Image 1 (cartoon, helix red, strand yellow):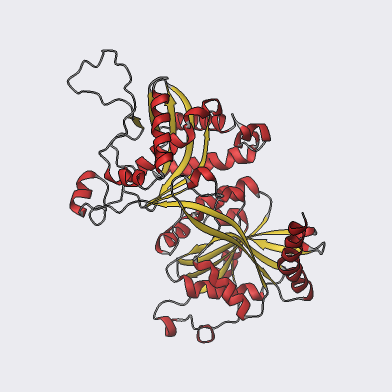
Image 2 (cartoon, rainbow, N blue to C red):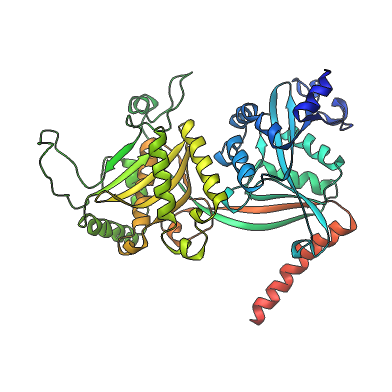
Length: 465
């Protein structure tokens, strides 16, 4: 079998873009490295085969985030778009990936297209993705430029859509290149997600290594969970005396927040005084109801992980989300997506499935990932019958305390801006949809109607109402 035939059989199709190394400026003469080329990975089965090269490239690029990992994209495709047409444009040199843009094809005629039939190629992102993007590797700028030139020559699409791109992301180069080539673009701000920058670590690297929180010696992997016990069981209300009788019955002590973590103390000190006082007072009142524990699962125990996920889904569906029909447990594709995300994260030591327990009963839960020095809060739920104790905020407090203890640099709340997130003195990270239209008559018409005329009309209607 020839090399080209083998590539076709595996779903990898090299693109004859007509851009030679001298014309594109991407060849070995220009960069001193191997020439970049673009291949199209057709379909899900071929996409599955590129996991290792994808994740290796991501770790070398400007945006190493969990929602950009191959496992996350694969979970999306398998649960939300299992039968969709998928094309992944990969810019690579030899075996090394430098950029990849997965695109799912949809055909529609709706209000979003001004009732005109349009074919959209969009990155695999929805509300549950939290944040959008593509793979950007080491030579991402030249690689993304080459992919864009290849896309220009591809027939079959009327618009490209990249959802929820964070401000400052490298993917915004696509807008610059598109507009420079005469392709109209539309922008819509979709999210302003709160995030908390954690205090800097003042200790030296030697002290940090001794505590398990800092960078390890060269060649050693950083353990995302420095606690020697993988299933952390933190009792935030009791401070047992090592000389006491372990069998003796101890009355739970009224909460006194630990003072050993100077970083968390700095987080607390920055909070609004009223919020901080209310949180402590409600913690004391909650402790009077029984023993309070923060339990953190890393998923290494498969049975404990399955039980933990079942408890998490139950808690998340117990309140208004269950009543409104938006809970994870009520939609099989959501259960599949979050279960797959959690199991994949557990295998690489990135899962943080946390619970707040009261008297042995789990009353609040969060599903999070710890990745590249950041805590990503994907989902949170709590028993709304205990609202007077703020169990959700108590859980967030414990999760932030844990992030400080791990030596993380950021706590990312993700999702839309909400008051409970802003209570933590969070900053905001804007996310925007980028839609690139092919410069046809229909593309220009829809772009003008959706992104110029419609916002004006909406503001007029809002003034009248």
